[in-house]
Length: 616
Image (cartoon, rainbow, N blue to C red; front, side, top):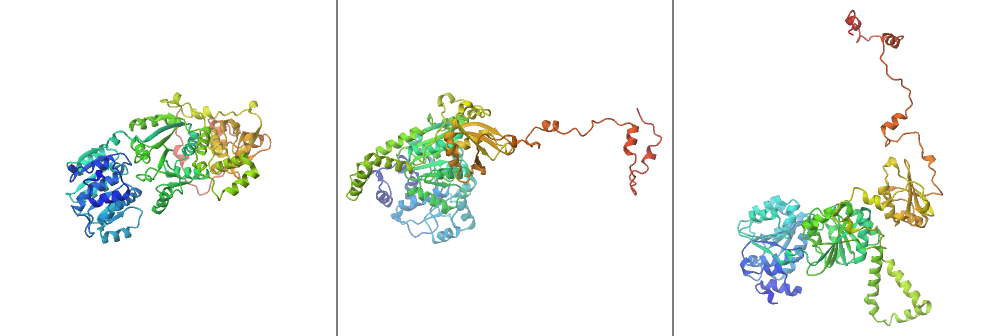
């Protein structure tokens, strides 16, 4: 391959063996002879081949004209990454890239056994890959000697600063030899990165690829507007509509990751979780499940998914909006890599639309504003995939021919097709019914607090003659438990697969709430509650026979939630109004009361004030 001219022969052989036919722009830029001994500051989009790029850049510096490395001793190069997953991924990439040079590569990352790492460092290594905290720990303990370093690589430098690793990076760079190459790779170059580069790089060459100037051209950005209560339902429909080989869903907290993982698991999705509370072994198993196809959806936090590379990742869903535009780019950069197309879908609640617009403007992204796929859209896409399935193009084999003829003779073609369709649908999660949202009318206008809920979930506490046949249910929460229709109704819709049209009157009592449900949806609500009738938060659901009896809910005991003025008015008037006491009243008050023996505290007080004339 002519593009490998100027590459170290052993590295070129490894690239050819790996099947590289062409290099990415950032990889080509590293082969410039003018950069052979210079520091570089590279900004390129995620997935542009930065790991191979800095492997190519530092190879001439480390080998110094030799074909292979000599015996391993103190490390010659140090590659620093922000997270464990990214550090281990960089280590794997460098292992095959430097395979034919005889390089010994060791890793030092948090979450792994430090004793094993110390033994590997004692045996010697040419290249060390690690995270900032663990590298600092080994340097301070004397188990890592970086006095012979010739090159230091900072991968995803902007993320390391965002995660608070500035002091660790400064300690490592101050400890390393002054005569070294410093290669900094980052998706973006904010002011903090520029200051760090100015402090620790000498006459650095600034490299910006064309792909980086036009952010993520292979990614289709979609802003899907929903009412807040439909956020999880929209995620289900987006996953079902695309049926991506691999998809990742980003949440803002570990609690949100656990909740969404359980929800999707109950909907028959092959899902794994990736959050900071997992051990390194659990995280490795989760990523391996995504790579070998045992799982197709990964629910992750920003920190846990930073820098991971999942092959064939076609879909990124932002369940929670990112905090800033840089995080949006880094999240979306998991897809659309190496020339492949990808989709980045932002789930935008109505009350967060302005925030989403600011994030997209800050990232210089032109997203298409639309609704999430509806249940009908998902069904139509399923039918298209079924009709285009290549299984129908395969000829009938000799092994299947006898049974196929028997099935046709016994049931006929129409019944067989219907049975096949039922089996096809049974292994998929049913799509969700979503509330219609007018995307264009709500653009650039923040809705009033709770306005979407009041509009989409009208509550009628009185009789509704037009509601039709209905069944009454009771839920074991009421005013005393701070129950409110604004979260009770979405909960019923989630658990029972209901819509706003299936819910009628709501009568809330102190410790119980009665809800009118359309008769056609009663069985669905009972099925969603399960055999023990338990809903979210431990609430119990019970079906009533006829209308609820509201008289038994009355109580003479006032609730703590009632206004204080109302409770004061209802108290029995047992106390008389206060009146000033005269001398006669004062005498009557103390008349007949025995004087306590031995009590001399008030002795002499009468004499003390005796004869004094009272004023007024």
